Length: 571
Image 1 (cartoon, helix red, strand yellow):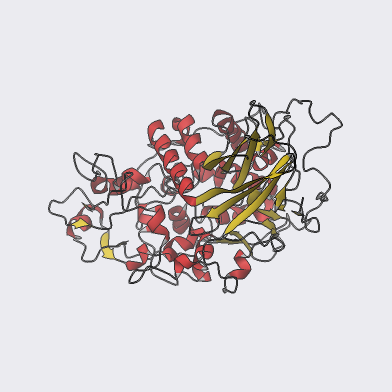
Image 2 (image 1 turned 90 degrees about the horizontal axis):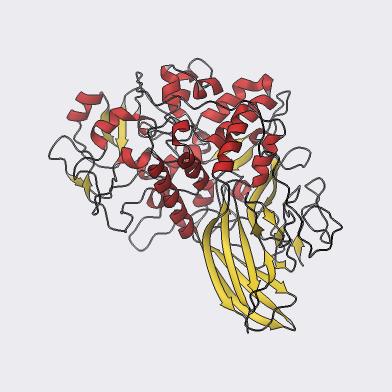
């Protein structure tokens, strides 16, 4: 085994001779009962259901129901070739944007930060709400405050109703073209002016009707079609803070935009074409059957021109867990979203994941009584895979089955809670993390693509404001990744330098000691929105929000989502 251990950065990291799982003297072939997670059946107060949506308006913002008067589907209007709703409001309302504040995982992490830093509530609130509740944040910034946790979860003020809108219509579409794509605009540094201008991608908008009905003026703004608009909240640079408020250096918590900006997607289009933008993938201009959409942008007034590209507003990414949570208990969310709509959003996220990476069993060869299997994973997305919040991970599950049906090797197996286990049921979720691997020759080793932040003591950081640096980042690079970019310090890989087979794609060699001829090799690339350890840590001193998250995780377990699968036969 050639493992890239990072023991110098992580307290208690194993040596290359240590198994990542918990120690046990039982024979390796004796199944052991896997202990349930610490959060299962935790008693105590639960966060109450969130208040239902209610119309709210201020001098700058209105909730989505104002926009829905014209930008929602009707009979034969704003529908695709099969009659499916593709309207801006209809596709937005179950999206991660719309549910950015109502997300149980977000609320649990937010509450945990507040509990850990009781003397820094204002800092935590401003940090955690600027991008999740941008409209309320803008309304309150003049008072020098941000939306509080209570505002989000129980508030009945105008700002509270705007906050629970998440990332909504009159927030995004009023962002001005001011320093976009620069560090000044990152981490919620967007600028919203007082002119009530709604920027859109189409020239010569017909605005009289909209001005009369909503008092917003539709205005052409080419910047709404550029990735730099998304960058304002999808580049998050934090600074660690201890319990006393001492501030550390910049930490790149989330960098999808920077990862895109240093890739070929940002600089290379086909001859005569522009580069690919975030909107091209996350706001498709086609139906689910890949038919180009060519529609009027609103159902009234009559006579509006058909527009192309006409982009759906579902913002599908990789957050399958949020949609599954919503489907398990739609009423708790308080949003006007049905179980079927949550499920449809989950399917969209799964479809996005299936397009994000490719998997190949490149070679299966005999090695004495065993096999060597070379598996290749390739990144097909415009940023790192996976990307976003550092709880996310993708990993390889490899199973070799003999002709008689017996499993002779399995790495990357999971239990009912989504935790990594050995074939005998032993947990192989280490207290630190699995290293980057070039060769896997034991069943308790798993190739995991992830970013792992650590705190000032070198311990894995689960709270966002504890994170000082990354101890591991072997997420696959996008095509054309420029290591000399001005952003390289923020997106550089960590822990992969010794692996010449890693980059935009990764070739991993699996060595199976014994496998008879004719064995079947099945390889799966799997994804999880949150590592089980990131949920588990919240049980140490659970808040009501964490306990409610545990209920969701029990109703809709964080079992892995299949990204890709291959199968081969051993010689």
